[in-house]
Image (cartoon, rainbow, N blue to C red):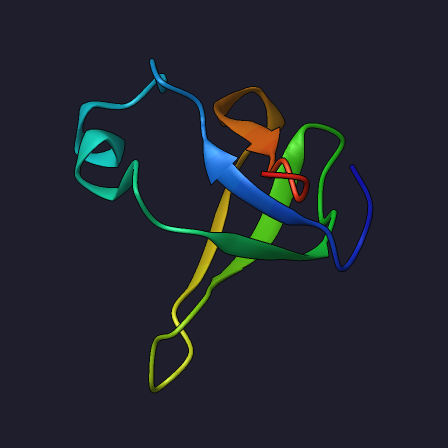
Length: 64
């Protein structure tokens, strides 16, 4: 995972409220901590920025 990558939440995220956002796509902005990822939710105005643990994310399969 690197800056600019598109990601989604894993099927079983660590925090209950994340289940509401399983269908959303995010863009990686930065890595502010060793295990944290700063994300921007795609399609929100104004930008909706999150910082969550890497373990909750997977890369989007751009092939299909």
